[in-house]
Length: 331
Image 1 (tube, rainbow, N blue to C red):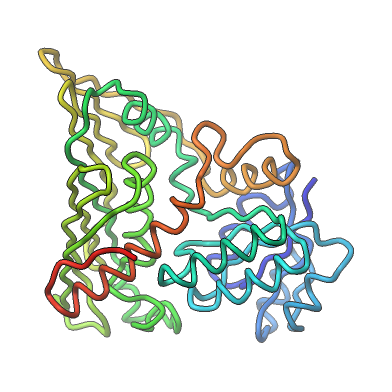
Image 2: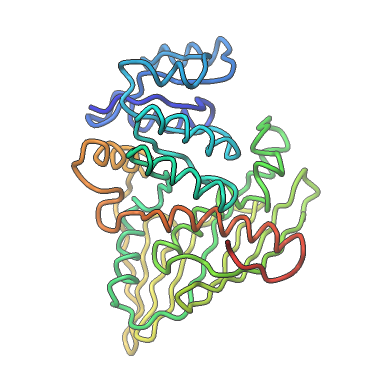
């Protein structure tokens, strides 16, 4: 059993805790770290059986009962936190986006490499069983030569945020390009998992409902492998997830979290509905397996350092493109 410290025990941190605490036989949270803690948060921690700490990160990770660290903190401080945890020799699972730019991403990866510490990113869609089959079709040549990929991950956060207080999630520095950091980069990572890193991008973002930040974002992509792509993310619409890849011999399309549609040349489309599953539990148990050496993370197609850096590199270029209106190359 891997005993983990949760850094950033807020709203999403609770989702992670709820997915495994008292359920998983691979990982459990023994402590949570927050800058401040109110009575309700303390009661939640007590109910879930972990200590809620307000000390420094250095002090928290020095506990003998902390085997590994899960970061669910603001994006902009991931890099410095990874350096601290890596220096202490503790394995790290970092929420997305990993960092907000290529330079800090490379520095964080180097810090973990230099310390010989496991570093993973919690892109939970990589553990979705539909996506895993979608990825297999793309990577193993079942669709023939691949030309183009499209993805959209959207939702209604801008509508909910009008009445919900979510300070750093509503900060344009922490969360640029509308819903790109909380939704779009999930779709981008799914694309990277099939096509590799993005070479250049042109992006646009605007505010359609008069909220506090942009809510409609569109990107045209050029991948380093020669493929093209489109990525969209809206923050003021019904929840939606869809990715589709186009090959010479066929197409594959993931609709929602359970449906996969494969359409081969000269044949009728085939739709398969997969069983429901808990992506958060799967990714945390996948992290635990990687910590104990049971399996790589994820098992079939391990996430490489190049893929980890690809998402922050894209995000940095897309933000610059939206500001300038120009095609911007990733760094």
